Amino acid sequence: MEQLEKAAQILMAPPDLVTSAQRHEAEQVFLQLRNTKNPFNLCRQLLETSQVSYLLFEAATLLRVGVIREWRDLSKEDSIQLRQYIVHYVVNRRNIPHYVRETLVQVVGIMVKRGSVEDQGEDRGRLLTEVEQLISSGDNTMRMIGCSIISALMQEYAVTVKSTDVGLTWETHFKAKKQFEGTDLRRIFHFIVNLLGELVKVEGKMSQELSALLLKLLVIAETTLTWSFISLHYILL
Image (cartoon, rainbow, N blue to C red; front, side):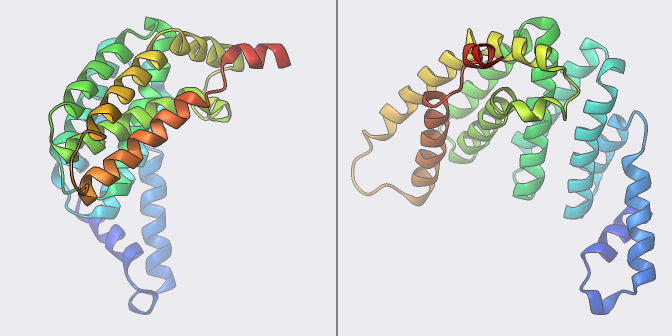
């Protein structure tokens, strides 16, 4: 931990305070970290104990790399527990930097998409239930986090070029995407539209927090309304 935090501080330091040799050595430390096999417990330890923002980001990035690289070695129980841990961490650590949180919710999206190939969206349904409860809590921070999770999840199913990054063949990606479109895409749309209906009932000038939430919801709604459905891809193929 001491070595990693020292390396992170060197990389984040102004150029005039560190030498090229120190920076190169620090870079090598993180290159070795990214090659760690079965990094999940290590990542959890880093996320739980470090206060260095760059190291938290590296831990989140390593989680993403590890999930993609070692998905086949994860049991169903381990993958679900890891996904639940990440969501719990994101929800309960309000002081983590935005870029760390966004990287972690992207990991959640990747895991749920990969899992849906085997479980036909069972865990995705559980996650959406959790997110709906989160957004319905009334806490604006929780609502924003919930929207980020939904956006990350939709991105994994919508952007087909990302399928290569998570180790899926095009055929498998299309099947997972089509299954998502036939089930939870509509669920997300109805949920978001209902939330928008509640927001437009707010009287008087809307607060900055509610305005930011409204923008998030509108982006998700627009994504569903402009969705490129899988049948179009099959026609092109």
